[in-house]
Length: 494
Image 1: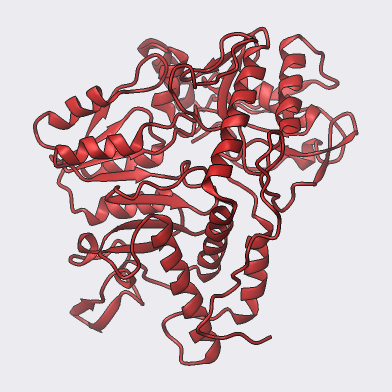
Image 2: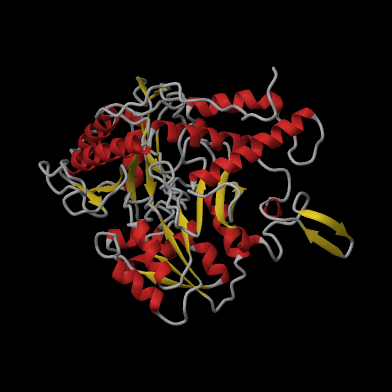
């Protein structure tokens, strides 16, 4: 195999013609035709409706990685052909990330390649050199990744949500105008719980009017919509946008990283080291100590190319269609309650947000009356081959508000968890679509939930684990036996 060092590594145009017609998946993913065995020993095609957590790879992403692997080598540190090729691929991926975030290559911004959004936000929280008295404005809608890092280094001021799980520009402006003046607004571009799309461009404009820079947590936004180019900082993950190879990005002004110690210290981040002195190199290399994830960067570059090749208008149209179908279908099931803004309230109401002017992704969280959320998810997986998420989705404050829990209820659950009992942790079930989701996939979910909510008997009994809160079928079917149960943390933790 040979390759031109001046060219891209593994760059391919999308091989499938994008589909914009209603009902069709926009693009295939690796593993989209996998069949799984159910507890009644039937085999069915697995339907992945957990894209808000992670997505499978686009075929082009897998192909780009396979093409690059024979050329893999250490970047920035070798004179050989493979090292030069790998370095070129890595830096071209960085350029693609800048363009993806709406920035000029060679301009005032840098793209720092991280593991994921969580690491990116922790990285920024460290590098802004905040004091405990400094204020970071954020919202109760956030994922824990955009809450916990700020609590370590600064004082958080929250924008509350209403009963629908949304907030408005007036509430945001009021929080920004309080004293002391905020150092940063940290806000999500899309909720991982309800799929709500805050008016991010208007939010950024309001913050800038008040003289406050903005970080956008774009983990959920990046696979579905263009990133907001006016954000001062933006962070996202490859594993949610069809590049599950362990790379994400933090994009922001070079000046934010030009002075001070980097988040990680080590080789690759320095120009000169003596036993009592270090001269750090310039960003972005200053922020990427250690051997970087070159394969992950190549994969993320390929995913960016595929999404932009499909076209954001096609992606958005597919998303909006599925959002309507998901919400309308689940809302039509007696005993099912949808959480969040502007969901359908009757079988004939299929706007899923348009009537109220509240746009959402094709992500729906719901509860089934009388059935524990963990049992709903377990039965959907074991009896119907549907992959969904349950729990609080790493957004506990937000979900507690959507569920309408009061302080005493939360304290009761907290006391139980401290005693090691996770059985009663509140939560919901979440179904989230991807570019590979079709109408048929959505309909399978709706039909299965209707059977569950209607009292369909299970072919097996289920046991709830006290330590995790998860339910597991009592079955001898391979894949579902006690010996097949994966050891690990609860599905509901986060």
